[in-house]
Length: 203
Ligand SMILES: [Zn+2]
Image (cartoon, rainbow, N blue to C red):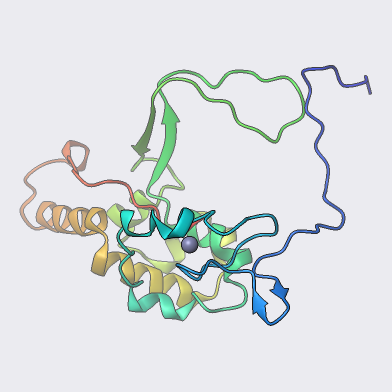
């Protein structure tokens, strides 16, 4: 293999990471004294909330998680399986107005250009929108079936129920589809849904 040039990134594993969250330091833990969040090694007081907590009131606290999330949010496997759970319910795919540039070097980074937008793809085989529109969240029709089978069944049920209860996109789709099925007013391709695509779990 050729020697990497000056414009090529080298990617490797961190064999023994020396960083940690909320390390114990004497009788206390490395946390923010204002918001109490755990800080990473090297992050100093004020890293999150500003000096003396001057930014603490700039943001409003997030609302509590839907109660359905208790099914999986404290499960020790949620960290390793959260991306699969997110994928099963990904209603939109991210796209850009311009092609992805070709970047030399090994894979590991994505370069984009142009405006970013989300695209709903109800005709895509693995789209969760299709799963909702045509199959009504039928368990045996879940997108990415092989991956879906690696998740506890009650996780999928819990997240589905949370979406039906709280997500405006899912609510809009459900109502629209029921109207179409009941009154045959318009083809599904004529649907216009005005709701932001959901972002369900942090990556
Ligand atoms: Zn803080």
